[in-house]
Length: 170
Image (spheres, rainbow, N blue to C red):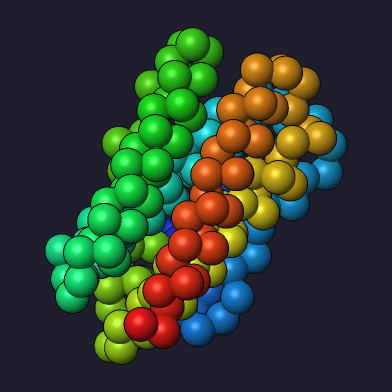
């Protein structure tokens, strides 16, 4: 498995990654074959950490929103991210693995961008990374229940990506 972690995940040393500059594209993970148990566990923790970072970014956006509609949208995105984290953590707990409590570097990278438009664009790219990574993993996971959870999480993240894009310029 080759995982490109643009967010400096702390989930597992077995998941190699590298940092990209904030303005560059986020590259989703690529998988070479069926995921081993340890690879799946590492991927789940990576996704939890990335989703947690995105939830924190959405919370900051909600606090700073100038209108109620944007505030509500970002709070909805944060709630969706919390559901995703719970679903992914439940998989790990079922497998006897403690879910990561860390937040990866995506949050700091997003908040370090000087312009609001850049922060929102980076958030949108982060949601696209999450969707692509979840979808890329699907054919490499044997467990049908985990596959369905990944599909559901990808649909949710893609919906949130589209919603955030609609407010990107406003």
